[in-house]
Image (cartoon, rainbow, N blue to C red; front, side, top):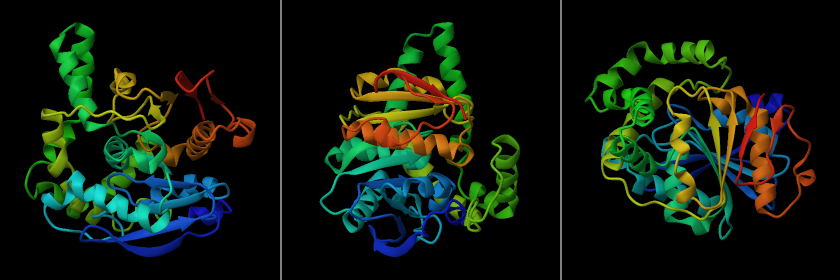
Length: 328
């Protein structure tokens, strides 16, 4: 695994019982140190975080897990078992097993970030900080789309149409059986090639996982169980958890404009942009790890010096509420 190449200690794996499923949980670092929980997206496993976890493990207790339907965790059948209620129960089980009675620093990418937004909005007492990457709060997206369509200026319509185009695959995933059949018939190979060609993310041991076809077929349940319902009937979601959002400017699936209006629902918010595609934890792990460290250090009241040397090209702004930019 790439953790070994990065000089990090290998991850310790154990099983944790979630809500009707067995979850594969991976831990690195000293358990007496602050815990960072990294949650992966679709159609990945915990291994998408290998390079980032390796950079964090010397400073933190790093926890990852294969979410239900992915990797070597259980794959329940049917959309009902992939709702947010089940996902939150699974996350609580992992938190209780790895960091009982402690606030943790939550980091999510893609669907890991989508479910992390649900977590920090519904059980904020479990988290000391949150870093979101390429996975917005679905309720915020629903409100964002309504605002843009309610004021149909050319710029608003352009933004809404742009995100609609990026999200078109979501409607394909609502079709019965066909997405699963295509993943099993070779779409996994095309996905691996697209990562290398479009994201500059070359395959390596662990990512994409050998189970990616099965992971993707099962993970379609995430979209069927949650997406359309939340986008059509968005709730009023807010959180006071200190939150940073890393915004890849070349993300093919999540528009950078989706952060618009977010500060009204997240008072302790910082934004950082990076010239990268969707899979930024793989393409820019040094920048991502450094910004996670810096965010946690700020939340804990430490200094930038305590967070370690700056990543070359990462240029933080004057305070945590500002928009900051970084280049690899």
